[in-house]
Length: 534
Image 1 (tube, rainbow, N blue to C red):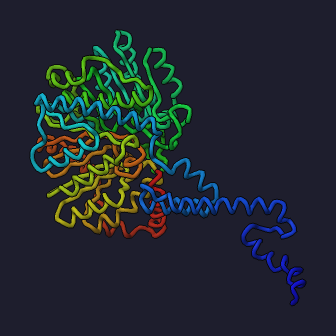
Image 2 (cartoon, rainbow, N blue to C red; image 1 turned 135 degrees about the vertical axis):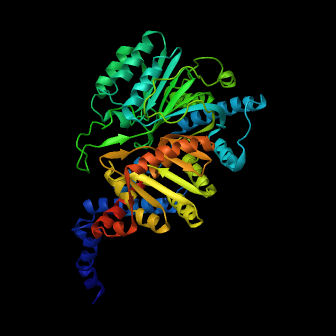
């Protein structure tokens, strides 16, 4: 074939390749729309090459590879998703505020140490306490009284009664707030406090709250009462800067005058979250939660976490009350004032405990909660009990749990029989086989309840309670807060709560689990792939 005939036949020879790469167009149209396709393809190739060299910076290899595949296989759409969800870091100004607030806490704590007000934790958990302080700037604080509350509606009433005792200020922060019959008494208490001259400040997560009925009515009620309120982690870039739209503040707390604080897993909303029939079950779902009432110096620690969140949103650090260091030096548990008791309040209230707060979230450089969880698991000698509604661990936590079992530690995991989040629940189930084969005992809390408490007890020495789930969202995307309580006495009180959960649960066996239809395993494994963004 001559050179001239080859030139004439080139369009026909090239056509199949062009159709494969860029769709049905001919060389005769190369100067038209096909050049656009070639240009876009070339730009995407440059993007893929650039990301191949940079996307692994400070990311887990599995996460980096997943994003690189998305950017390569879904041109431009994958890049758009990466820009929206590829980073869990807050804007630079927000991170600077967190660092500034931490430096203030460190200065106060150094002043307290020099005054000899507290000593390091004794015993084998001394290094855990030191780790928590290095991550958060908050040391352990002794001399605290703790009440455990597990009755959902009674807890709402008790928090409202607490607000009625306020003299100076009330600070409220919840991930989800609903204005309904169950919470109306709480809002009434806020209004009464504001009317008698108490300064009331309230924060809520924007996405966690606006999706529930009565959102506009709630804002109107707060405005009419004169309560100062702000949204947390706004999805609008002009309200706080550009950031991942699914970063959330998942904390739950109430502080009254800096002397009493409430924290835990319960949101400020009716027990069924206005869902009616369960989405993935057959009956109305009800949330089973746990809150603790803290009386003593640790209440000021909880207040400090609130003030840091307020500062992040408003650029103002509330200055109610005396100097924070003076408060901590002089705060003693109030043994005379307590909210109405109910059947959910477990154990005596006169015992005093050493406590340490562990806030975590995208404002911190490290995954504080994950590091503390894994540290405690590796320190465990006899028994670990974990309660979590969303249990989707990363590799480090999974290895810590299975390693604990292999060295003879008894590990129990309390989860819901039927979860409320479809993808998260199925991702959670994808770990059951590996956990059961390792020797972990799994307890399924009966329907229609969602076991929403987040706790962990380690041996007879330390207890964790708070807002953090054991999944990648809580480790990297959510602002959370856990309370670490040292000592056998409180662990024994928590054992009674764990026993009450176990009494309403069914133990899952490996034989029963492996007898499920094969398609359910496939669904669980598919949902596991999405766990990092759930």
